Image (cartoon, rainbow, N blue to C red; front, top):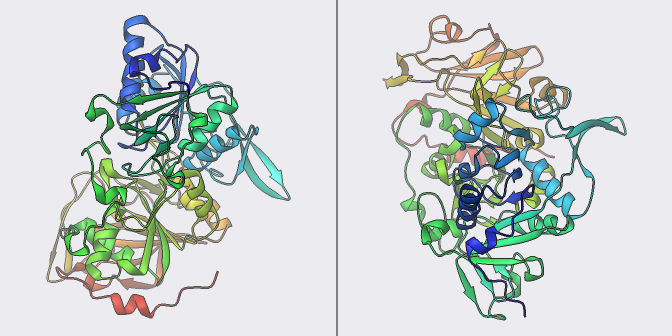
Length: 522
Protein backbone atom coordinates (compact mmCIF):
# COMPACT_ATOMS: atom_id res chain seq x y z
CA UNK A 1 0.00 0.00 0.00
CA UNK A 2 1.42 3.36 -1.06
CA UNK A 3 2.28 5.72 1.78
CA UNK A 4 0.29 8.91 1.15
CA UNK A 5 1.06 10.59 4.48
CA UNK A 6 3.44 13.52 4.20
CA UNK A 7 4.24 16.90 5.71
CA UNK A 8 2.58 20.11 4.59
CA UNK A 9 5.92 21.20 3.12
CA UNK A 10 6.16 18.01 1.04
CA UNK A 11 2.58 18.43 -0.15
CA UNK A 12 3.29 22.04 -1.12
CA UNK A 13 5.96 20.83 -3.57
CA UNK A 14 3.30 18.91 -5.48
CA UNK A 15 1.74 22.21 -6.59
CA UNK A 16 3.25 23.54 -9.82
CA UNK A 17 3.32 27.00 -11.36
CA UNK A 18 0.25 27.65 -13.47
CA UNK A 19 -1.89 25.15 -11.56
CA UNK A 20 -5.58 25.74 -10.94
CA UNK A 21 -6.27 25.05 -7.24
CA UNK A 22 -9.78 24.21 -6.07
CA UNK A 23 -9.87 25.15 -2.40
CA UNK A 24 -12.40 23.87 0.14
CA UNK A 25 -13.80 25.98 2.98
CA UNK A 26 -16.66 28.25 3.98
CA UNK A 27 -16.17 31.64 5.71
CA UNK A 28 -13.95 30.64 8.69
CA UNK A 29 -14.45 26.86 8.51
CA UNK A 30 -12.96 23.85 6.72
CA UNK A 31 -9.98 25.68 5.18
CA UNK A 32 -6.93 23.32 4.95
CA UNK A 33 -4.86 26.08 6.48
CA UNK A 34 -1.62 24.21 7.25
CA UNK A 35 -1.16 23.10 3.64
CA UNK A 36 -2.20 26.52 2.37
CA UNK A 37 0.40 28.21 4.56
CA UNK A 38 3.07 25.81 3.32
CA UNK A 39 2.27 26.65 -0.32
CA UNK A 40 2.35 30.37 0.46
CA UNK A 41 5.66 30.05 2.37
CA UNK A 42 7.22 28.15 -0.52
CA UNK A 43 6.28 30.95 -2.92
CA UNK A 44 7.71 33.59 -0.59
CA UNK A 45 11.02 31.70 -0.37
CA UNK A 46 11.43 30.46 -3.94
CA UNK A 47 8.95 32.33 -6.12
CA UNK A 48 7.20 29.05 -6.90
CA UNK A 49 4.52 28.06 -7.54
CA UNK A 50 3.31 31.18 -9.34
CA UNK A 51 0.66 32.21 -11.86
CA UNK A 52 -1.96 30.17 -10.02
CA UNK A 53 -5.69 30.13 -10.61
CA UNK A 54 -7.47 30.05 -7.24
CA UNK A 55 -10.99 28.63 -7.25
CA UNK A 56 -12.88 29.21 -4.00
CA UNK A 57 -16.55 28.22 -4.29
CA UNK A 58 -16.99 30.65 -1.41
CA UNK A 59 -14.27 32.97 -0.09
CA UNK A 60 -12.82 32.57 3.41
CA UNK A 61 -11.15 34.92 5.84
CA UNK A 62 -8.04 32.70 6.07
CA UNK A 63 -7.77 32.54 2.28
CA UNK A 64 -6.54 36.14 2.11
CA UNK A 65 -3.05 34.69 2.71
CA UNK A 66 -3.17 33.67 -0.98
CA UNK A 67 -3.55 37.32 -2.05
CA UNK A 68 -0.14 38.11 -3.53
CA UNK A 69 0.74 39.49 -6.93
CA UNK A 70 2.36 36.97 -9.33
CA UNK A 71 1.33 34.19 -6.92
CA UNK A 72 -2.35 34.23 -7.95
CA UNK A 73 -3.10 35.24 -11.54
CA UNK A 74 -6.80 34.42 -11.63
CA UNK A 75 -9.51 34.19 -8.98
CA UNK A 76 -12.87 32.42 -9.43
CA UNK A 77 -15.39 32.67 -6.60
CA UNK A 78 -18.85 33.80 -5.50
CA UNK A 79 -17.72 35.81 -2.47
CA UNK A 80 -14.64 37.89 -1.70
CA UNK A 81 -15.91 40.01 1.19
CA UNK A 82 -13.55 38.49 3.78
CA UNK A 83 -10.41 39.00 1.68
CA UNK A 84 -9.44 42.71 1.91
CA UNK A 85 -6.06 42.25 0.24
CA UNK A 86 -7.62 40.38 -2.66
CA UNK A 87 -10.30 43.07 -2.96
CA UNK A 88 -7.55 45.68 -3.39
CA UNK A 89 -5.85 43.55 -6.03
CA UNK A 90 -9.14 43.16 -7.89
CA UNK A 91 -9.88 46.89 -7.76
CA UNK A 92 -6.37 47.73 -8.99
CA UNK A 93 -6.60 45.25 -11.90
CA UNK A 94 -3.81 43.06 -10.50
CA UNK A 95 -5.75 39.78 -10.62
CA UNK A 96 -8.31 38.44 -13.09
CA UNK A 97 -11.56 37.89 -11.22
CA UNK A 98 -14.67 36.01 -12.29
CA UNK A 99 -17.74 35.96 -10.05
CA UNK A 100 -20.04 32.95 -10.39
CA UNK A 101 -23.08 32.61 -8.09
CA UNK A 102 -22.71 30.04 -5.34
CA UNK A 103 -25.08 27.36 -6.62
CA UNK A 104 -23.77 27.44 -10.19
CA UNK A 105 -20.14 27.28 -9.06
CA UNK A 106 -20.82 24.17 -6.94
CA UNK A 107 -22.70 22.59 -9.83
CA UNK A 108 -19.88 23.55 -12.20
CA UNK A 109 -17.43 21.65 -10.00
CA UNK A 110 -19.73 18.64 -10.24
CA UNK A 111 -19.96 19.10 -14.02
CA UNK A 112 -16.16 19.24 -14.27
CA UNK A 113 -16.04 16.00 -12.27
CA UNK A 114 -18.31 14.47 -14.94
CA UNK A 115 -16.20 15.94 -17.78
CA UNK A 116 -19.06 18.11 -18.98
CA UNK A 117 -18.61 21.45 -20.78
CA UNK A 118 -20.67 23.43 -18.27
CA UNK A 119 -24.13 23.90 -16.77
CA UNK A 120 -27.38 25.66 -17.62
CA UNK A 121 -28.93 27.78 -14.88
CA UNK A 122 -31.48 30.55 -14.41
CA UNK A 123 -29.47 31.82 -11.46
CA UNK A 124 -27.93 35.18 -12.32
CA UNK A 125 -30.38 36.23 -15.04
CA UNK A 126 -31.01 39.96 -14.98
CA UNK A 127 -28.11 40.62 -12.61
CA UNK A 128 -24.47 41.63 -13.02
CA UNK A 129 -23.67 37.92 -13.52
CA UNK A 130 -25.78 37.90 -16.69
CA UNK A 131 -23.44 38.10 -19.73
CA UNK A 132 -25.59 40.96 -21.06
CA UNK A 133 -24.98 43.01 -17.90
CA UNK A 134 -21.34 42.39 -17.02
CA UNK A 135 -20.87 38.59 -16.96
CA UNK A 136 -19.62 38.71 -13.38
CA UNK A 137 -16.39 40.44 -14.39
CA UNK A 138 -15.11 42.53 -11.48
CA UNK A 139 -12.40 44.51 -13.29
CA UNK A 140 -11.01 45.26 -16.75
CA UNK A 141 -8.18 42.72 -16.73
CA UNK A 142 -10.49 39.71 -16.90
CA UNK A 143 -10.65 38.81 -20.62
CA UNK A 144 -12.15 35.32 -20.70
CA UNK A 145 -15.64 34.49 -21.90
CA UNK A 146 -17.02 32.43 -19.03
CA UNK A 147 -20.77 32.30 -19.86
CA UNK A 148 -23.42 32.96 -22.50
CA UNK A 149 -27.20 33.11 -22.87
CA UNK A 150 -28.81 30.00 -24.33
CA UNK A 151 -32.49 29.57 -25.20
CA UNK A 152 -34.03 26.17 -24.46
CA UNK A 153 -37.68 25.56 -25.35
CA UNK A 154 -38.37 29.28 -25.26
CA UNK A 155 -36.75 29.86 -21.86
CA UNK A 156 -33.51 31.72 -21.23
CA UNK A 157 -30.64 30.20 -19.29
CA UNK A 158 -27.07 31.18 -18.54
CA UNK A 159 -24.59 28.59 -19.75
CA UNK A 160 -21.64 28.70 -17.35
CA UNK A 161 -18.48 27.26 -18.91
CA UNK A 162 -16.39 24.62 -17.13
CA UNK A 163 -12.75 25.33 -16.28
CA UNK A 164 -9.72 23.10 -15.60
CA UNK A 165 -8.72 21.99 -12.08
CA UNK A 166 -5.14 20.84 -11.39
CA UNK A 167 -5.25 20.47 -7.61
CA UNK A 168 -8.08 19.90 -5.15
CA UNK A 169 -7.03 21.03 -1.69
CA UNK A 170 -9.62 19.71 0.76
CA UNK A 171 -10.06 19.02 4.44
CA UNK A 172 -11.58 16.37 6.69
CA UNK A 173 -11.27 15.15 10.27
CA UNK A 174 -9.92 11.58 10.11
CA UNK A 175 -8.07 9.65 7.41
CA UNK A 176 -7.12 6.00 7.41
CA UNK A 177 -3.87 4.76 5.94
CA UNK A 178 -5.37 4.49 2.45
CA UNK A 179 -6.77 8.02 2.50
CA UNK A 180 -10.44 7.35 3.19
CA UNK A 181 -11.68 10.51 4.92
CA UNK A 182 -14.47 11.35 7.37
CA UNK A 183 -15.69 14.76 8.55
CA UNK A 184 -17.17 14.03 11.99
CA UNK A 185 -15.70 17.10 13.73
CA UNK A 186 -16.32 19.58 10.90
CA UNK A 187 -19.20 22.06 11.08
CA UNK A 188 -20.25 21.20 7.52
CA UNK A 189 -19.64 18.63 4.81
CA UNK A 190 -18.97 20.97 1.87
CA UNK A 191 -18.18 19.31 -1.51
CA UNK A 192 -14.95 17.45 -0.91
CA UNK A 193 -16.04 14.46 -3.02
CA UNK A 194 -17.02 16.42 -6.13
CA UNK A 195 -14.00 18.71 -5.71
CA UNK A 196 -11.61 15.78 -5.56
CA UNK A 197 -13.34 14.09 -8.50
CA UNK A 198 -13.11 17.30 -10.53
CA UNK A 199 -9.34 17.35 -10.07
CA UNK A 200 -9.06 13.71 -11.08
CA UNK A 201 -11.25 14.29 -14.16
CA UNK A 202 -8.72 16.93 -15.26
CA UNK A 203 -5.72 14.71 -14.61
CA UNK A 204 -4.89 16.55 -11.41
CA UNK A 205 -4.10 15.62 -7.81
CA UNK A 206 -5.92 15.69 -4.46
CA UNK A 207 -4.31 16.87 -1.22
CA UNK A 208 -6.29 16.34 1.98
CA UNK A 209 -5.55 17.91 5.36
CA UNK A 210 -6.87 16.04 8.41
CA UNK A 211 -6.62 16.16 12.16
CA UNK A 212 -5.69 12.52 12.76
CA UNK A 213 -4.82 9.17 11.19
CA UNK A 214 -6.44 5.84 12.00
CA UNK A 215 -5.91 2.25 10.92
CA UNK A 216 -7.32 0.91 7.67
CA UNK A 217 -10.67 -0.75 8.35
CA UNK A 218 -11.48 1.30 11.46
CA UNK A 219 -13.75 3.79 9.66
CA UNK A 220 -17.38 2.92 9.06
CA UNK A 221 -17.84 2.95 5.27
CA UNK A 222 -21.03 5.06 5.53
CA UNK A 223 -19.04 7.75 7.37
CA UNK A 224 -16.45 8.09 4.60
CA UNK A 225 -17.18 11.24 2.57
CA UNK A 226 -14.07 11.01 0.37
CA UNK A 227 -12.72 7.59 -0.66
CA UNK A 228 -8.99 7.02 -0.63
CA UNK A 229 -8.91 6.07 -4.31
CA UNK A 230 -9.16 9.81 -5.06
CA UNK A 231 -6.56 11.02 -2.53
CA UNK A 232 -2.89 11.46 -3.45
CA UNK A 233 -1.53 13.13 -0.32
CA UNK A 234 -2.60 13.21 3.33
CA UNK A 235 -1.33 15.92 5.65
CA UNK A 236 -1.92 15.68 9.39
CA UNK A 237 -1.96 19.20 10.83
CA UNK A 238 0.93 19.58 13.25
CA UNK A 239 -0.32 22.90 14.60
CA UNK A 240 -3.81 22.49 16.13
CA UNK A 241 -4.51 26.16 15.36
CA UNK A 242 -4.33 25.29 11.66
CA UNK A 243 -7.17 22.83 12.06
CA UNK A 244 -9.64 24.60 14.31
CA UNK A 245 -13.26 23.82 13.58
CA UNK A 246 -13.89 27.53 12.98
CA UNK A 247 -12.15 30.87 13.11
CA UNK A 248 -13.26 31.45 16.69
CA UNK A 249 -12.93 28.11 18.51
CA UNK A 250 -11.10 24.80 18.33
CA UNK A 251 -14.23 22.67 18.55
CA UNK A 252 -17.90 23.06 19.36
CA UNK A 253 -19.80 19.74 19.49
CA UNK A 254 -23.13 21.53 18.99
CA UNK A 255 -22.02 22.66 15.51
CA UNK A 256 -20.84 19.20 14.48
CA UNK A 257 -24.10 17.55 15.54
CA UNK A 258 -22.31 15.44 18.16
CA UNK A 259 -24.69 16.61 20.88
CA UNK A 260 -27.64 18.96 21.31
CA UNK A 261 -27.71 22.34 23.07
CA UNK A 262 -30.96 22.67 25.07
CA UNK A 263 -33.37 25.34 23.85
CA UNK A 264 -33.22 26.96 27.30
CA UNK A 265 -29.51 27.59 26.76
CA UNK A 266 -29.97 29.37 23.43
CA UNK A 267 -28.88 33.02 23.61
CA UNK A 268 -31.69 35.59 23.61
CA UNK A 269 -31.61 38.61 21.34
CA UNK A 270 -31.57 42.01 23.10
CA UNK A 271 -34.26 44.51 22.16
CA UNK A 272 -33.06 46.72 19.30
CA UNK A 273 -33.91 47.74 15.74
CA UNK A 274 -32.53 44.35 14.65
CA UNK A 275 -35.01 42.56 16.88
CA UNK A 276 -37.85 44.74 15.60
CA UNK A 277 -37.03 43.76 12.01
CA UNK A 278 -36.68 40.05 12.75
CA UNK A 279 -39.95 40.05 14.71
CA UNK A 280 -41.79 41.46 11.70
CA UNK A 281 -40.19 38.85 9.45
CA UNK A 282 -41.12 35.99 11.78
CA UNK A 283 -44.77 36.99 11.42
CA UNK A 284 -44.56 35.74 7.80
CA UNK A 285 -43.86 32.18 8.89
CA UNK A 286 -46.28 29.36 8.09
CA UNK A 287 -46.61 25.98 9.83
CA UNK A 288 -44.10 23.39 8.64
CA UNK A 289 -42.52 25.92 6.32
CA UNK A 290 -39.00 25.78 4.91
CA UNK A 291 -36.99 28.97 5.08
CA UNK A 292 -33.57 29.98 3.83
CA UNK A 293 -31.69 32.45 6.00
CA UNK A 294 -28.97 34.73 4.73
CA UNK A 295 -26.11 36.46 6.50
CA UNK A 296 -26.41 39.78 8.31
CA UNK A 297 -29.69 41.15 9.61
CA UNK A 298 -31.59 37.87 9.26
CA UNK A 299 -29.26 36.15 11.72
CA UNK A 300 -31.74 37.14 14.43
CA UNK A 301 -34.48 34.86 13.09
CA UNK A 302 -33.45 31.83 15.15
CA UNK A 303 -33.29 33.63 18.51
CA UNK A 304 -36.60 35.45 17.89
CA UNK A 305 -38.37 32.27 16.79
CA UNK A 306 -37.02 30.40 19.83
CA UNK A 307 -38.23 33.17 22.15
CA UNK A 308 -41.70 33.02 20.57
CA UNK A 309 -41.84 29.23 20.83
CA UNK A 310 -42.25 28.77 17.07
CA UNK A 311 -38.80 27.52 16.13
CA UNK A 312 -40.39 24.10 15.63
CA UNK A 313 -42.79 25.54 13.04
CA UNK A 314 -40.20 26.44 10.44
CA UNK A 315 -37.14 24.55 9.30
CA UNK A 316 -34.33 26.96 8.56
CA UNK A 317 -31.96 25.88 5.81
CA UNK A 318 -28.76 27.54 4.68
CA UNK A 319 -26.59 27.47 1.55
CA UNK A 320 -23.68 25.63 3.23
CA UNK A 321 -25.86 22.53 3.54
CA UNK A 322 -27.01 22.86 7.16
CA UNK A 323 -30.68 21.93 7.58
CA UNK A 324 -32.55 22.66 10.82
CA UNK A 325 -31.24 24.01 14.08
CA UNK A 326 -30.28 27.61 14.81
CA UNK A 327 -28.13 29.20 12.11
CA UNK A 328 -25.08 31.12 13.26
CA UNK A 329 -23.72 34.46 12.11
CA UNK A 330 -20.46 36.35 11.71
CA UNK A 331 -17.45 34.07 11.23
CA UNK A 332 -19.73 31.13 12.09
CA UNK A 333 -22.09 31.84 9.21
CA UNK A 334 -22.77 28.56 7.45
CA UNK A 335 -22.82 26.56 10.68
CA UNK A 336 -25.83 25.69 12.82
CA UNK A 337 -26.38 24.80 16.44
CA UNK A 338 -28.20 21.46 16.64
CA UNK A 339 -28.38 20.80 12.87
CA UNK A 340 -30.78 18.07 11.77
CA UNK A 341 -28.80 17.31 8.62
CA UNK A 342 -25.58 18.41 6.94
CA UNK A 343 -25.65 18.08 3.15
CA UNK A 344 -23.03 18.44 0.43
CA UNK A 345 -23.30 21.99 -0.91
CA UNK A 346 -24.00 21.01 -4.52
CA UNK A 347 -26.70 18.55 -3.45
CA UNK A 348 -28.13 21.17 -1.14
CA UNK A 349 -28.53 23.55 -4.08
CA UNK A 350 -30.41 20.78 -5.87
CA UNK A 351 -32.79 20.77 -2.90
CA UNK A 352 -33.15 24.56 -3.04
CA UNK A 353 -33.69 24.58 -6.80
CA UNK A 354 -36.43 21.96 -6.46
CA UNK A 355 -38.87 24.63 -5.24
CA UNK A 356 -39.23 23.51 -1.62
CA UNK A 357 -38.43 26.95 -0.20
CA UNK A 358 -41.48 28.76 1.16
CA UNK A 359 -39.51 31.82 2.21
CA UNK A 360 -36.04 33.26 1.90
CA UNK A 361 -34.86 36.08 4.17
CA UNK A 362 -31.82 38.09 3.11
CA UNK A 363 -30.03 41.30 3.94
CA UNK A 364 -30.53 44.54 2.06
CA UNK A 365 -27.59 46.89 1.59
CA UNK A 366 -29.13 48.97 -1.23
CA UNK A 367 -32.45 48.87 -3.04
CA UNK A 368 -34.02 51.14 -5.64
CA UNK A 369 -37.25 52.28 -7.29
CA UNK A 370 -37.28 49.19 -9.55
CA UNK A 371 -37.02 46.77 -6.64
CA UNK A 372 -33.43 45.88 -7.50
CA UNK A 373 -31.15 44.99 -4.58
CA UNK A 374 -27.38 45.33 -4.29
CA UNK A 375 -25.33 43.36 -1.76
CA UNK A 376 -22.28 42.68 -3.93
CA UNK A 377 -20.37 45.88 -4.78
CA UNK A 378 -20.22 49.37 -3.29
CA UNK A 379 -17.73 51.64 -5.00
CA UNK A 380 -14.29 50.20 -4.30
CA UNK A 381 -15.70 47.65 -1.87
CA UNK A 382 -16.23 44.30 -3.62
CA UNK A 383 -18.15 41.56 -1.83
CA UNK A 384 -19.77 39.20 -4.34
CA UNK A 385 -23.22 37.63 -4.17
CA UNK A 386 -22.53 34.36 -2.35
CA UNK A 387 -25.75 32.34 -2.50
CA UNK A 388 -27.94 35.45 -2.68
CA UNK A 389 -28.91 34.91 -6.33
CA UNK A 390 -29.75 31.25 -5.80
CA UNK A 391 -32.17 31.93 -2.96
CA UNK A 392 -33.94 34.75 -4.78
CA UNK A 393 -34.39 32.54 -7.85
CA UNK A 394 -35.88 29.52 -6.12
CA UNK A 395 -38.12 30.81 -3.30
CA UNK A 396 -41.87 31.49 -3.39
CA UNK A 397 -41.59 34.55 -1.15
CA UNK A 398 -38.56 36.78 -0.62
CA UNK A 399 -38.04 39.17 2.28
CA UNK A 400 -35.18 41.64 2.22
CA UNK A 401 -34.54 43.10 5.63
CA UNK A 402 -32.40 45.91 6.95
CA UNK A 403 -32.55 49.30 8.61
CA UNK A 404 -33.95 52.19 6.58
CA UNK A 405 -30.61 53.97 6.73
CA UNK A 406 -27.11 52.68 7.43
CA UNK A 407 -24.32 53.80 9.71
CA UNK A 408 -25.01 55.25 13.14
CA UNK A 409 -28.80 54.97 13.22
CA UNK A 410 -30.20 55.13 16.75
CA UNK A 411 -33.80 54.31 17.67
CA UNK A 412 -35.80 53.76 20.83
CA UNK A 413 -39.33 52.73 21.72
CA UNK A 414 -41.43 54.84 24.10
CA UNK A 415 -44.96 53.75 25.04
CA UNK A 416 -45.08 51.37 22.10
CA UNK A 417 -44.05 54.03 19.58
CA UNK A 418 -40.84 54.03 17.58
CA UNK A 419 -38.67 57.13 17.87
CA UNK A 420 -35.74 57.95 15.60
CA UNK A 421 -33.15 59.31 18.03
CA UNK A 422 -30.45 59.79 15.42
CA UNK A 423 -30.82 59.24 11.69
CA UNK A 424 -28.30 57.00 9.98
CA UNK A 425 -26.29 57.65 6.85
CA UNK A 426 -26.05 56.81 3.99
CA UNK A 427 -29.49 56.11 2.55
CA UNK A 428 -30.34 52.60 1.38
CA UNK A 429 -33.35 53.42 -0.82
CA UNK A 430 -31.81 54.86 -4.00
CA UNK A 431 -32.96 55.77 -7.49
CA UNK A 432 -30.62 53.12 -8.87
CA UNK A 433 -28.43 50.61 -7.04
CA UNK A 434 -24.70 50.48 -7.70
CA UNK A 435 -24.86 46.86 -8.89
CA UNK A 436 -27.83 44.57 -9.49
CA UNK A 437 -27.55 41.45 -7.35
CA UNK A 438 -31.33 40.91 -7.42
CA UNK A 439 -33.50 42.01 -10.32
CA UNK A 440 -36.91 43.48 -9.50
CA UNK A 441 -37.99 43.09 -13.12
CA UNK A 442 -37.10 39.39 -12.99
CA UNK A 443 -39.15 38.99 -9.79
CA UNK A 444 -42.20 40.63 -11.34
CA UNK A 445 -41.84 38.56 -14.51
CA UNK A 446 -42.06 35.32 -12.52
CA UNK A 447 -44.70 36.57 -10.08
CA UNK A 448 -42.55 36.40 -6.94
CA UNK A 449 -43.79 37.93 -3.69
CA UNK A 450 -41.16 40.37 -2.45
CA UNK A 451 -41.19 42.38 0.80
CA UNK A 452 -38.70 44.91 2.15
CA UNK A 453 -38.82 45.03 5.96
CA UNK A 454 -37.19 47.86 7.91
CA UNK A 455 -37.50 49.00 11.51
CA UNK A 456 -39.94 51.76 10.55
CA UNK A 457 -41.70 50.61 7.37
CA UNK A 458 -42.56 47.65 5.18
CA UNK A 459 -42.57 47.87 1.37
CA UNK A 460 -43.88 45.42 -1.21
CA UNK A 461 -42.72 45.09 -4.79
CA UNK A 462 -45.92 45.31 -6.85
CA UNK A 463 -46.64 45.64 -10.54
CA UNK A 464 -46.69 49.42 -10.20
CA UNK A 465 -43.36 49.42 -8.34
CA UNK A 466 -42.11 49.80 -4.77
CA UNK A 467 -45.15 50.29 -2.54
CA UNK A 468 -45.27 51.36 1.10
CA UNK A 469 -47.67 48.96 2.87
CA UNK A 470 -46.93 49.38 6.59
CA UNK A 471 -45.45 51.99 8.91
CA UNK A 472 -44.35 51.68 12.53
CA UNK A 473 -46.39 53.36 15.27
CA UNK A 474 -44.96 56.82 15.95
CA UNK A 475 -43.49 57.18 12.46
CA UNK A 476 -44.52 60.03 10.15
CA UNK A 477 -44.26 59.35 6.41
CA UNK A 478 -43.31 62.91 5.47
CA UNK A 479 -40.74 63.23 8.25
CA UNK A 480 -39.20 59.79 8.72
CA UNK A 481 -39.67 57.87 5.45
CA UNK A 482 -39.81 59.99 2.28
CA UNK A 483 -36.77 62.17 3.17
CA UNK A 484 -34.70 58.98 3.51
CA UNK A 485 -35.54 57.79 0.00
CA UNK A 486 -34.17 59.05 -3.32
CA UNK A 487 -37.46 58.18 -4.99
CA UNK A 488 -41.09 58.46 -4.03
CA UNK A 489 -42.73 55.09 -3.48
CA UNK A 490 -46.33 54.25 -4.18
CA UNK A 491 -48.48 54.41 -1.05
CA UNK A 492 -50.89 51.52 -0.54
CA UNK A 493 -54.55 52.55 -0.28
CA UNK A 494 -54.88 50.19 2.67
CA UNK A 495 -51.68 51.40 4.41
CA UNK A 496 -51.42 49.64 7.76
CA UNK A 497 -49.64 50.21 11.06
CA UNK A 498 -47.08 47.55 11.96
CA UNK A 499 -48.27 45.21 14.72
CA UNK A 500 -47.68 47.02 18.05
CA UNK A 501 -46.50 43.79 19.68
CA UNK A 502 -43.33 44.05 17.61
CA UNK A 503 -42.31 47.06 19.67
CA UNK A 504 -42.82 45.58 23.14
CA UNK A 505 -40.10 44.31 25.47
CA UNK A 506 -41.55 40.85 26.14
CA UNK A 507 -42.38 38.02 23.73
CA UNK A 508 -45.07 38.84 21.16
CA UNK A 509 -47.10 35.68 21.86
CA UNK A 510 -47.78 34.80 18.22
CA UNK A 511 -47.48 31.00 18.35
CA UNK A 512 -51.23 30.37 18.08
CA UNK A 513 -51.48 32.75 15.11
CA UNK A 514 -48.70 30.96 13.28
CA UNK A 515 -50.28 27.57 13.96
CA UNK A 516 -53.62 28.85 12.64
CA UNK A 517 -52.14 29.68 9.24
CA UNK A 518 -52.68 27.31 6.36
CA UNK A 519 -49.68 26.54 4.23
CA UNK A 520 -50.44 27.42 0.63
CA UNK A 521 -50.66 24.61 -1.90
CA UNK A 522 -47.71 24.20 -4.25
